[in-house]
Amino acid sequence: MKILIGFVLLSLVWSADSKAQTAMPQVETAAAPAYPRLPSGGREQGEVQVEVSIRPNGEVANAKAIAGPGRLRAVAEQAAKQWRFAGSERPIEKLRLIFAFILKPGIGESPTVAASFRPPYRVELYAEPKDIVTIQDPLMIDVEKARKPKP
Image (cartoon, rainbow, N blue to C red; front, side, top):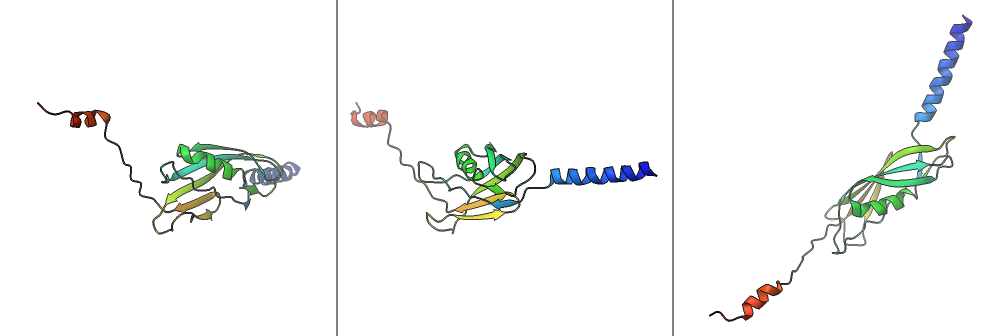
């Protein structure tokens, strides 16, 4: 009987400990990145996944973009470093945050950028798409051909 009671108590302690380890950290502050512009004036869209490690006091210790468009990764990492979580007894080694950069007509002209937090760990940023017109100069060879008189 004592063995059975000891086993039940041990099971309850183990169950409570495993629940504490797998509990999802509570977000206290979520930061949204700025929506970057390309050199051409346009914008790129896509999702960036950032893996963070969290200190016991809730601060982000490290942030590394692991997926998503290369030009959006740096701003997503910077924003991830500004997030704050509820404190915990132990550090959290890997938690994935998602930053979705979405081009949506009708948002409004720059600098209007709308952002929304989607629990548990997703931020969506919306910006107006821009039509980019590229003008290319004629090749020099073509100009020379046009200048030479035809025999």
